[in-house]
Image (cartoon, rainbow, N blue to C red):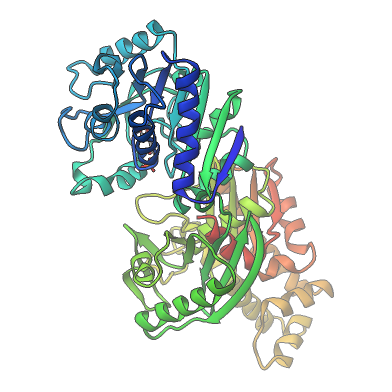
Length: 533
Ligand code: F6R
C-alpha cells in the first residue's frame, strides 16, 4: 500500500482528483468505482472544475457506486443517488446511462445485487475504485466481521455506522438499517484502488491499517492483499498523537501517545466533590498538555457503569454524567469514554503482554477485583458496560455480602481487601505466628505487603491464608477461561509485583494452556489504553 500524506483535506482532495483525472486521460472509457460520504466531496469538486476547464472528459466514462441505503427512495435527499447527482453527475458531461448505483427502491434486493454484479462484469470490471473508510474500518458498507469475501449484497448496518451517519439525517432513527453494497470481493477485483482518510476520527483505523495485520474486525485491512492501493490521508487522520486520560479514585493520569509511543505523562488529584469543577480541572490539564503536544483525539477511562454514554461512578461526582459531552463543551476534538478496567485491558493488549495476541482478559487485584475482556482485538461491551468480572458469583449459598447487592461475589474472596481480612482473622487465631507479630508492630493492622513479608519468611499462618486466597482467585479465573478461552489472563495490581510468588501459585493451581502473565504496564495501562479508544 502506497501512502500519500497531505497537509490537509484540500490537498487530499486535489491529490486524489489528479489521480482520477490521470486515469480518465489515459483511458477515456474507464470504469470508475465511486464512493459517497463526506470525504470524496472535495474530489468531486475538483473533478467538476477540471471538466469545466476542458481538462477531462466524462462522455465515455462509466461509473459504479459502491453502495446505497436500503430501502430508500432515489429522490430522498439522503440517498446516494441524490448525493451523486448533486456532487458530480449533474455537473459534468457524463452520460446518465453510464452511471450505476445499487437501487434502494428495488423490490427484490437480492436480485438487484446479482444484477449489479453482472453489470460490473459486463463492463470488464472496475479500473479505478475510490473508497472512503468508516471510523470502524468499514469500506463500502462491509462492516466488521460480517462475511467479508462477498460480492454485492444486502447488509445490516452496525450501530456505530448508524451513529456515524446520523449526522446527515434529522434523527438517528431515520438512518436506514440496511444497505446494498459491493462486497470486499467486488472491491478487490478493481484494478486500482484509492483509499481516502480525512480527520482525526479516522486516525485509529489508519494506524491499524498501516501498522496492523489483516484483521476481519477492520475490513479495510483486507486491502493489504491488493497490489495497487494508494492511501491518501491528511495529517489529522495520520497523526498518531492522542491523549489518554485515566480517571482514578485518587488521581487522574494523562498520557500522550505519538505513533503509538508514550511521549508525555502527567497527573492531577481527583476531585470528588463537584462534577463541574472536576471536569474543568481535567480540561485545564488538557489545555496545558496541548501547549506542547497537538493531540487530535482524546480517550477517557473512568470507573463506574457507562450506559448510552452516561457515567455513574460510586466514588466520583458522576451521576448519569455524559462525560464526553461535558468535556466537548470545552474541547473541540473527538472524545471517547470507556470503563477504566476496559481501558487498562486495551492498554495491555496494544502495548503490553497482550501485544501479539487476539484475546486477553486483564484482571486487576486491588481493593476490589476489576477487569477488561478483549476478544478478537476488541473490548467486549454488553448492552451495559461489561467487564464487571469482580462480581461473578463464586459462592451462592452463604456467600459474603457485597456492596453491589449480591452475595458471594468473586471480589469478596479474591481482592487484596479479602486477603488482608482473612490474614487479620488468621493471625488473631494464631498469636504465636510471625504474621501476628507483624500485625502488632503495624498498629494492629495488616496490609498486602506484610502478608508477603511473612510468606517469604515461611510463616505457616500466612501460607495457609495465601493458599486459600489462591484457591478463590483460581475459581474465578477458571470461570473466565471456560467462558472466553482467551490466549492469556493478565494479572495486575500491587500484589502481582512481589516477585513471582503469586504468579507461580496461580500457574500451578490452574494447569492450563492459557498463558497466565503479570501486567507489564501496571499503573500506566489505563491511560495508554484510553488513548487508543
Ligand atoms: C460511502 C461508503 C462508506 C464511506 C465511509 C466514510 O459510499 O461506502 O464506506 O466511505 O463511511 O464516510 P465519510 O467519508 O463520510 O467519513
